[in-house]
Image (cartoon, rainbow, N blue to C red; front, side, top):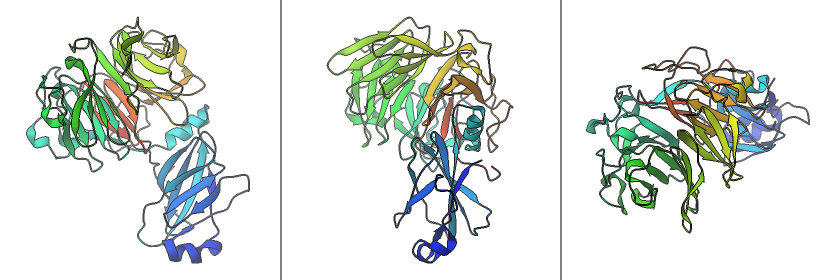
Length: 440
């Protein structure tokens, strides 16, 4: 059961309702979740949250309810906070929390914190590889009405803009929080016309299939067929950060990209090799012998997580190049929902991204499935799918056995905790809302 936090209405209504048009309700044991701050800045702060866990802020017009879930926050330590949006009229607020430990119940709690599946961008028209489906009239229109062209990676900045490496339209697209789509970099015609600095929409890209986004909106692009990693700064100017090959020729099988915030280190995938770049040391191979690498993620301790789609494995690679298998059994079958990750066939696993409370999201290309790998080494199915032009489940609760997605390329999470899935072959970017349904 979730823990709940309330202030007594008699204790706080006269002050808080007058100043903030709200009241925080509360009733709990001393050892339970405890409210420690609510001020004019509308920041709600608490302590004694379960770790790992998820805290949910709710409101209602009456202390008897019904209560509406407003915002979820991952709890990675006992303390946490959320900023409440202004409400129309007086509101009562409460805070609830559930643990998301590496157990079956913890997984259920995690699943119930998420809600609807939706299409963020794409109409499923871009089906043929090597063809650009971009049309000038898409610019500034709704992203859900624009055709994508084999998108390979989607990632958000701290403001909620989602950037898409739209490989076959030779561009980086930006979807605003309002849902409109804009060209962020590239001209939609493949080629190379200079290193920059220049306005990003005047410089050509050539089959970009990887990117990395900083919270401030700086975007790094794996410009695959130009053999470069490009930087687009927050003013919209693009330059070349470094050559990804010795001569700037096409990069074989480039996909995953990660760039450190201060640009002193970068990693990228080049088919069978995990490569590193530093300003002083240039290009180096960290690990090799892979079959066909997908995306990557660098953990806080410096370890690199990589997906080998061709070998059906997820590896943890140390900075010195030592490999450890994190998930997969090296085949396309076996294990499954609730089984050990090392006994489960992850068919063409291609995407990985960490969950703030521990564990990882894993996305398979050929298997067309999104998995959750917990810290106990168990995998559980989040989204099912199959190959071909499958597109289902929009506007519905995401967690059900019916297939909803097709071939995957990348999975990420935005700053709000929403899950972003890039389905390349049929041209969709989907989102699972980190928002509880009313019936939870």
